[in-house]
Image 1 (tube, one colour):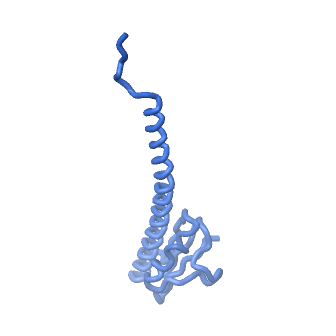
Image 2 (image 1 turned 180 degrees about the vertical axis):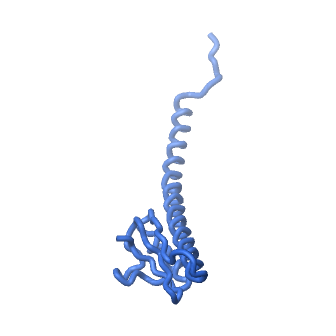
Image 3 (image 1 turned 135 degrees about the vertical axis):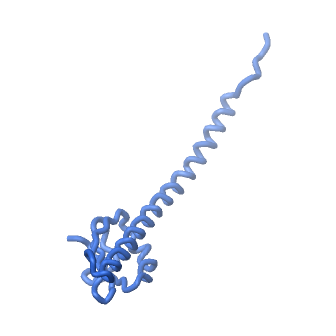
Length: 122
């Protein structure tokens, strides 16, 4: 009787499956962190866009100098606040004394002096 040597043994297959499982276990947290950072970057870009839009409306005298922005990440301002602080006149929310107060709708506004405030919508 002739043995067929074309194929893999059970042990070889289990080793391959184990290696794949280890690789998947390593990749999943990395993808999760990248996804969170992307959402934070999106929030920051939306805030910058709202600030630019309000500033243009203030300078031209046309349109509204406040805009609603929806934030999706709880720590967006805490992590990106220093990055946003170099945008002219941005300051912490005077009501709460903090830069950020959670997710949800926030109002970005620019006053006549060009100072930017970001406050939670109530």
